[in-house]
Amino acid sequence: MPRGQLILIEGLDRSGKSTQASILASKLSPSKLIKFPDRSTPIGKLINEYLTNKSFSLNDQSAHLLFLANRWELNQEIQELLNQGHFVVLDRYIYSGIAYTLAKDGIHDESISLGKNSTQLGDVDWLLGPDKGLPKPDLTLFLTLGLDEISKRKGWGDERYELQQFQAKVKDCFLQILDTKDPSICIVDVGEKTIDQASDQLWGIIESKGKHTLVDEPISYI
Image 1 (cartoon, rainbow, N blue to C red):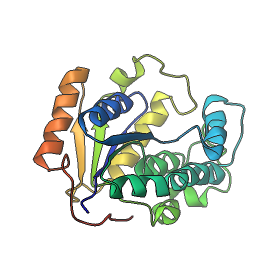
Image 2: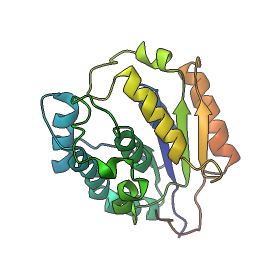
Image 3: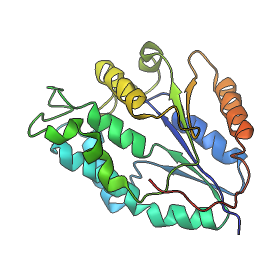
């Protein structure tokens, strides 16, 4: 039986990825939009407290593994949906998990990182290791735009990681770990574009790569 495709939209905070993920899910049928972190799960509720309450303290390794465990909470649901012929659109996934923790390496701002026993923070193999076995997206779209444009958007600064200097480092980390030689990974410049212009741009990529149709290939894994 043909399966649906797994499409991931990644980006910095306030980059428009949630808006674009929602629009994309409305264009694919049947589809399911899943946002990470999923703050409704038991682990997700802890993550929400961590992100919204800057006095809530976790060491960096624990925070990384919480976000990762949240992805495993949704693993079975994602695979079942795909095998039932649904398209699954992800708003953040493994690349966010790695990039945001990798960016903490060498940071001495305790509101972002405790900066203690941080040997693992710069080790991509350690950061990625527990993600192995999760479904690999059939297409990853990383939305990029200028940090000045992002910082002017509504809601900027409400959460722990929404600091311009830190987001600049996160962006560098994304570009470090995204393998642009992989045809399933696309870096998309949406700077100075309207919501509709960005949506049309992303849909053009999806159509050109045939990611809007069911496929016979089995699910790939990280």
